[in-house]
Every structure is written in C-alpha cells, then in structure tokens.
Length: 275
Image 1 (cartoon, rainbow, N blue to C red):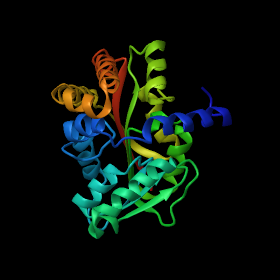
Image 2 (image 1 turned 180 degrees about the vertical axis):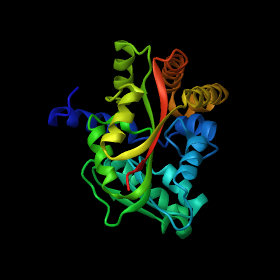
Image 3 (image 1 turned 90 degrees about the horizontal axis):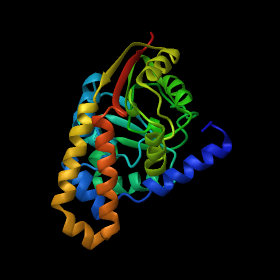
C-alpha cells in the first residue's frame, strides 16, 4: 500500500479500530499484568527494551527526550517515573492522546509535570527546543511514512543525540500471507527487512547505526502472554466474552509461530545524530 491520502485514511481507520480500546480485562490480564509487571506497555519489548533505551539515551533527571508515536504513553510514564526525565509524548491518534492524558491525571504531579503530551503527526511536528534523545517502541510498522518520520525526528534532536527504535519487521522467511495477517489484525502496513532501517537512519543523518536482533525478546514476551492468557481464561471469558478469549489465543499462536520461524523479526535499531 502506498502513502497516498486514501491509504493514510485507511491506516488511520485501522489504528483507531484496533488501539482505541486497550483497557479491558483481556489487555490487563494478558499484556500489562501478564507480561509487563503492571506497566501499560502496548509493545513486545517491555521493561527489557525500555531500560535499554534509558541506558542508550543516557537518560537522567536533566534529560529531555521525545517519545515518537507514544501510543497511550506507558513508556513515557515509566521513564519519567524511573529516570525523572522530561518527556515529550507525540501521538497522532486522538483516542490514544485522551488515554495518555487520563492516565496522567491519575499519575500524580511528580510524573505528570514531567510529560508534555502533543497531539501531532510525527512526520511533520517539530520540537520547540532540541531534545537530548528520542525513541519509538513498536510503532513504525504502523505507518507507510516511516522514512519521513525518521528524517523529521532528526530535526528535533541535538547533534550527537541517540534515536532508538524497537519495531516488528520482516524476517527472512516472511510470506505474503503473514503480511496480510499482520495488516488485518494489527494494522502493520510497513514491514521491510532490517536493512531498510539502517539505510533510513543513515539517510536521516544518524551515524554509528546498530541493528540488534531482539526476536528472542518477542518470543519470550509472546510465551509469557500465552501463559497469562491460559491462567486467566475464566476471568477473561466472564468479562470480555469467549470470542475475545479465542481471538487472543489464535492470534497469539500465529505471531509466536511467525517469530519462531523468522517470518517476523523484532528489531532494535539505534544511531547517533551527526555532530
């Protein structure tokens, strides 16, 4: 699918259909509590990748970082709470922006005061002040304008700043059927191989680009969610219905198999903006 206006309309529709309602018992029991120790992360990397980002970006209480395509802001809240940094959370889906703000209203001033929520398209938005680093977790496969987003993010960073990305991409054994499944179920429209991300980062002005294969993290998280799903079957069925439970079970099995067979790969890519 090309990045036409029609295609973008479909991406927007798909994103809202899938990600505007992530607060049910199925999400909490399977993903947040089941896989991420209660943190509301809609990603595979969880604390493993969030802590790796904090290390790479050298995040501390003086840092200002950008969460690109922040979703419902779970990682922004985690880093603000654990590292005491300032975070600008950029998200274009208004439903998820509302969710971020709702969470912040309950988070207490110590966290809420450190996070600035911006409803904007990350392919065109520019920060008022250059940031010390940026990250994006499990979002860049959801837009056909990923190259423009990476290039535009560079314009909001200080020279020498790190941009770290975790993303699902094509494995060496990907099939057309897997691509269709990933689009139909989760709106994944952009599934190039890992080399594409190295090229995109370098073209945007990032140096010392590193690609890390974190598929083992994706497999481990998927297996953990599968166990949590089984353990909480009765409650999920009671609160969300049997069809929802079967959906999680069937979809989870497909993704787990895809990672094990390298139809899909979980990539962690990062580079430093040229000085």
